[in-house]
Image (cartoon, rainbow, N blue to C red; front, side, top):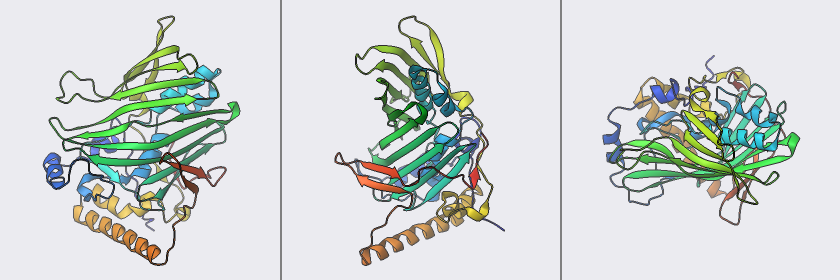
Length: 377
């Protein structure tokens, strides 16, 4: 029996969704779509037809950056012999979250209460859309074997700037190496979609990684193509690892997140490879459904299954009708909750609004259980 679960290939450097899902005449379509949108407009409530989507939800994209990888960098973080070695691996792991995105293709904005649950070996990952307006996604992952826990709470807010759209990812990502009592916090770069003069998509902006328990920090700066696309170095990242107390630099970092990123010991001048993007995020395997009986009705690959199937078959009318049906159902549920004064409550996270205008998500589960969808380690 058909489970209704449709899982598209992951974002990957070679093969996978980034290489297969391309839309014809996309620049012309984009310009016509945004012709009545004012500069500085918040695009959170802006609805795209399936032609401009990739066949997966934003929840799946967040999850893939954790569970779809050819190299187990997360285990290296927990196996480091010194706090500096572990911190270096955490920096490499942070860089590995960046994945190629095609110009003109964006994931679906998850519906309220949508979930995504996938396992990779002993790593179990669970995500939930805990708010729709504004869009807030929460992630909880645990690996009992590696003694690792991840907690993310973030919101991507896209704004139109005339010649570009910038999706700024607010919130923080936390990595806990439990057996060492080390707690790492980091943010994420922004996604810049440029229309003129050279269309393209780049991860840009500053990322800070810090561990108060060890007094180590890292600053990373992501850069894309120049405005004219000349003399630029796309997918470039540069930064340093340093001591928080003295600001003394330990390693300088430089390279391309889709190729090789090196670090140089500032005292000895020795250079070494920090991260190899081509090995880590090339030809990634698509997750598979192992147990249809326990798939949640809120699972991303089920919620968007009919839309995904239409898009993968290039049946745009079917995809458009299925997407419209989902959106109308969500509006109806929102109106019903409003009419009776009911507030929606996340199932897997406690959600709090912080004083600085951000969001704080606390997992309700101590450990994430194994998932019905799995990806080979």
